[in-house]
Image: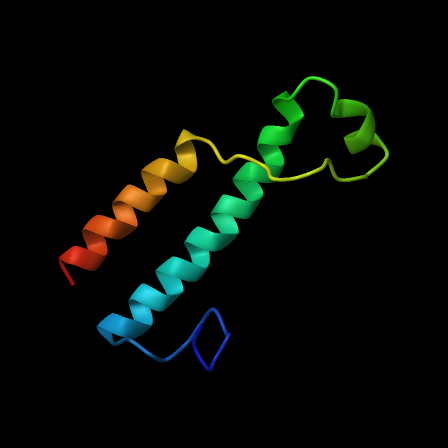
Amino acid sequence: MTADPSPHSSDHSSRGRLERALASLRGLAVGDALGSQFFVPGTLPLLRRRALPEGPWQWTDDTEMACSVVAVLAAHR
C-alpha cells in the first residue's frame, strides 16, 4: 500500500500506479467474492439477515480477467 491512501494520490510513478492497481484489484476480488454468494444455494437467508456466509468465498471469472489485465500492465510498465 502507498503512504497516501487518497484516491487522488500524487504518486504518478510506475510503482505508484501498480500499487493503486493492486489495491483496486483486491477490492474488486472481495466484492466479486461477496457478490458470488448470491448465487450459492442456501446463502440467501443469511444474506437477507445481513449475515455473512462461512468462508472461503470464491471469486469469479471477472476477477480472473482483471488479474490478467493487471499482470499485462505490470509486465509492460
